Image (tube, rainbow, N blue to C red; front, side):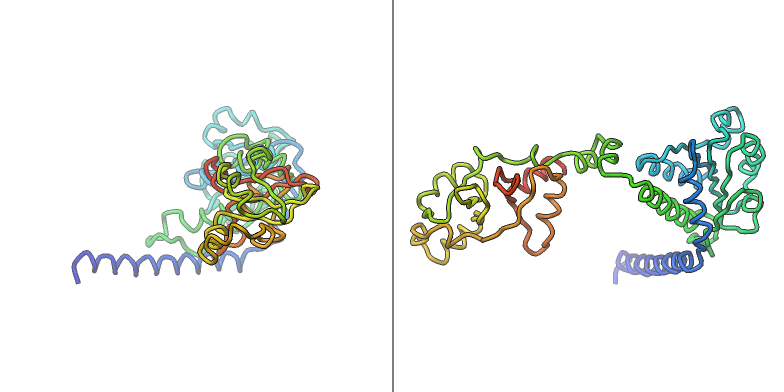
Length: 331
């Protein structure tokens, strides 16, 4: 075996061991986490009449910023309070209507402990989130939650790894629990995310992405394939939408169906009625649905994804939406 091969084998073994250690540490977190204090934190956030501030030093500070950002985007007035800046003037933004959540693995970080009395003097509720139940932070806070962390992934048990992972897990669950308790809606989420892929997924409607009736080839079940083949080919929609006189959806005939029919029956297939060749009762989507919902419906069967989906309005076919267009739009 080459030195490169030996190195790859060693790296594989090392990664396997680290992943196993990480999994065990997180299983310990889930099994030992006390839910009642966490429930009290959720209730305190829901009861907060002002701003929920998150703060922390070092890696815990980065996690605090992420949690604050997630909660802000899901309907809770939150902000990150830089602890050093707070000691030098920024504490003025905290009022007696607010809640301050402090993240610290040890609960013994001096800069954070210095904040406690000043936050209490402002009249804000103080919550300590730590992995040390006997820490000064846990004991001096109005409420505390202990996040079990037996060891770090770091071989020296020093670099914050598992401790920041459990903080992030706690923060994400807190954010979603508060979001659901408030009944935060998809429309509200869309209003907070107008840009990027998230914005497109929660705001773009099927109506905006579909090909309308003028660009969509349609036919009835009685028409022969040769009678509609030119329209089918020229509109390059990828399908024929089969409807009745009331524009009710009866079936769909796709490019793939055409190829398979030609292979099986040759030119004789042109004399066949479309109703005998189509896929009856195909899936469809409402014109006012989100384009993202259309994409999820089209991908719902991973073995047989749908490339073209009929669009209906009060049960009448009004267009089709194509997977290619959804992907191109970045949905």
